[in-house]
Length: 196
Image (spheres, rainbow, N blue to C red):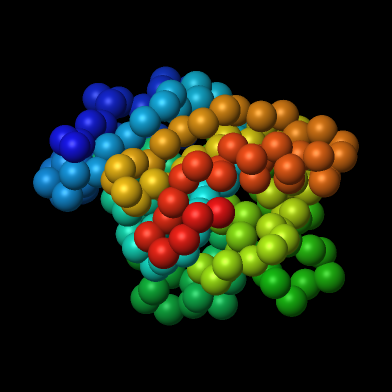
């Protein structure tokens, strides 16, 4: 299957000015046969949840796609990693420092980050690990509810080499019901080593 990437990100999405890095990442993805399916949301604030997450390669292909499209997608990383020369690179990659040892929890920090931002796309893997888990973490649901932002379902399907955008959802108050409908959406897709 030949690759496909849209020419540009939606106008309301937070984005970088396309440059050589975007062209290089686009070339790598197309040469590798990866494609994008679905419609990117034309919203300034959203939580992107990506699954199934079974391999380190998910982050590689996801980062290449993000750069190729010129999107600013924040990824949470512990604040300690921002000390020293690595901090410069992490900031260039749109990562967000999180204080994991503070009493003010990660969910509250991210809700505040959304409040303080005019535009923010935040990427989260709901499984929280590359291993198979029976129960997904609820942090994305808590952040979405607290910050009043929608959740965009993003899937990795390795058999078709597709990163796909599914429905854009508003999270309701029933966590179990929301998890059930989200897990049902991911059921057909297969990561590198397993399904969701």
